[in-house]
Image (tube, rainbow, N blue to C red; front, side):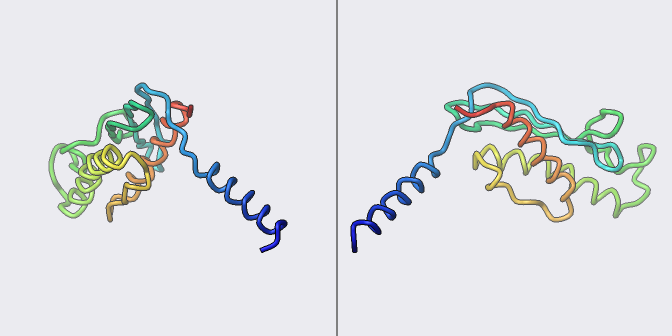
Length: 139
């Protein structure tokens, strides 16, 4: 291999190593909020960062009035009038905990898979996490 090609390969290797350097987030607690969906509901996330890494996460979705979607989400006037609708709504509620636990465990959105049937919650979650991480900045 001639010196010119060796120099180019060496330069590209150095760039690749520098490009892979992971920057860490500032330690602290950060919150993020998604944009409202078509019904005015939104997601809120709180991240704890220690040692530059995500160590804990909580996530809730809220209805337009600010109330948390919980075991009553999907009921109409306190009653389950449409079982299918209620089950779908509760799938989204369960996904809140799954998404937060997956992020806490993996430390990255890459480690969080969307739950089938809870895609809107997933999108709200990722948007809120990205906002919180923007607030955390990077060292």
